[in-house]
Length: 185
Image (tube, rainbow, N blue to C red; front, side, top):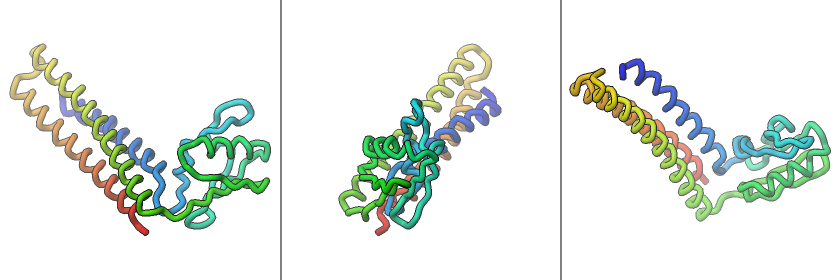
């Protein structure tokens, strides 16, 4: 495994970071966030469709998300999808738009959300470890096949560990930011 292979693996690690950021958007903080409904799919003209393809999603104030569907016929389907989701919020349908009003978080709920962030953080670290293990297995195989020396194997191991440490640090920083956002009153 060359340095080029390690650099190519950065794309895999970057993918984990992007997925982690998107995943954390679905965790509620003290303010309304469009990311909370990003993963929501609705039944739209007989097919599962992402909400953003069936409606306009905006934030009207710090605690309210407004969903304006392209077709008024889909209001009921959007409302049902929100109720069935893990948002734990009751949508308000006025016949034209759906409003999601988020009440202030209690201290207990903030703690619970921080634990969810911790779990998502650990999931991201596990994905990083999995890629590290796959790359390390490739390095060991290359050494066994005589493509690199034993010294080369350990040089690659050190470089791989530096990359893993760098990405774990990024994951930790993103996690801390989200926890601070959640705990703000």
